Image (cartoon, rainbow over all chains, first blue to last red):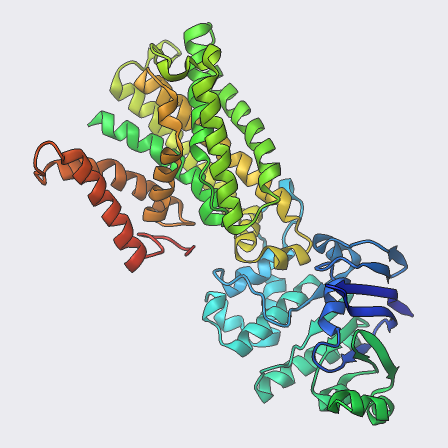
Length: 244
Length: 285
């Protein structure tokens, strides 16, 4: 089943088409890789899918709900989407624990005024922090974490939301091997839970290892798609990466 | 002594309420004196021109400040960072101009004299000690109300908005509503301080609610510490007592007042250089 689709999606920056009439279909319960050279429009695509940017034209269809204008950032959660950022965006001057609690507690303004976090919320936080190995650091401020720990905390934050679609923007970049392993296991576990994962990644080895399907983008356009092994062999993919 | 304690309590209420917006939510607002003024004028006008009692005027002041801050907050919600600060600067200036020029209501520069003291259940608060007890009760109430807000899930979202508004939005939180709500809560609390101020000093005019007053309240919370309610109380205590302490320094007569201002400025600068989070702050701007 296709859970997330774009149809002729377009985004221009000063006349340059960062995403150029892009139509892709993303399968539920799979890991879909998006690769391409720098500036090929991968992050712009994720920003369009998560409402950070407004599309110029085209459609985004999430689980059958069609949007041909902007999805506002605070609405994407209700579409069942969550994401990480290429440059980690944590709540720096808050504790590791609060970084998780804040995304699992009440979203309604007035109800949240009368809510204190409960054992239930703490349990979710403990579960995801244990998973990324940050439970011991729960009382530290986020800005005191190392780069790798910060990336892991950002991933833990998305896990806590328990939504259907996860957009990961280079989650492995800059991680030590043992941390890469943790992230890799998390992605595979999500797939086992029938969650949908969109993965932007530069490491071809990881793409081969993890992805069920790959879209290759170049200059905002879809260059080719298919199974990782067959796609990565194609001449145009190699050329795009090596600059022809 | 009671005089200083009363002033301290009024400024502690102002500081705590402003801290909700600046320290917890990260919105650098310098329009707090406007809401303080709305509370003060509501009480002064009602007590001198009608039979309305102090506590009714206090509640009405809260309602008017909340309504005005709601409208201002909608406009401010479109601004971020430095532009937000400049926007609040503009609103303080506008409201000050209203206080100064709406002469039929506020008597403009002539001010409103003869504001009576509160009376409740037969207790007259004209006596400074009684008044102090009353204002301290309200200080404690404001403290617990603020604590209730910052310890709630709502309070945690405020901090997240301060840290990264886009990131928290992506998790389904409409930052605009949160920012608007805390701005209104904060303004309502400032109005309480205003009502007490008007009734205590018995005479108010627009000069008490200028931008400089907003800056003074901001100095209290930066000095005491952002995102810490007790910090605001400490900051108020320090800045209210400072002129009294400096009295003993023995500056040459004639320039005492100016010297005190200068010392006060130097303390702020030193603090920013060596302890930017304030005395017991939990957040750096």
